[in-house]
Image 1 (cartoon, rainbow, N blue to C red):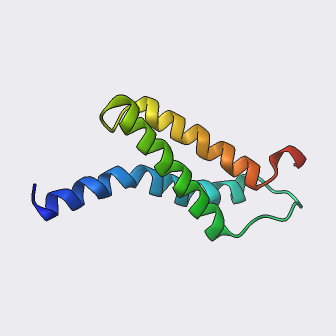
Image 2 (tube, rainbow, N blue to C red; image 1 turned 180 degrees about the vertical axis):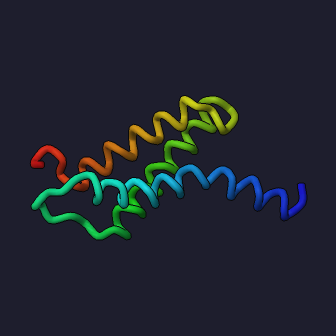
Length: 92
């Protein structure tokens, strides 16, 4: 495998977690308006990115390949739960 092909595979593996980590905090700021103090946008994005990478890695290990819709569904649920916890959704 060439270096370009390896880089292409790695970036395509990371892309779903990156996009979800970027868009979820922005959408939650628009959708959830509460008086509770929120963590910084960068911290929310970093936490969601790490959670997404963990789920993608576990999905790759469990299924033996990436790109399974079950993995993407779990990644979305875990990231949304993490976002809800960071925004203290139970207080809203």
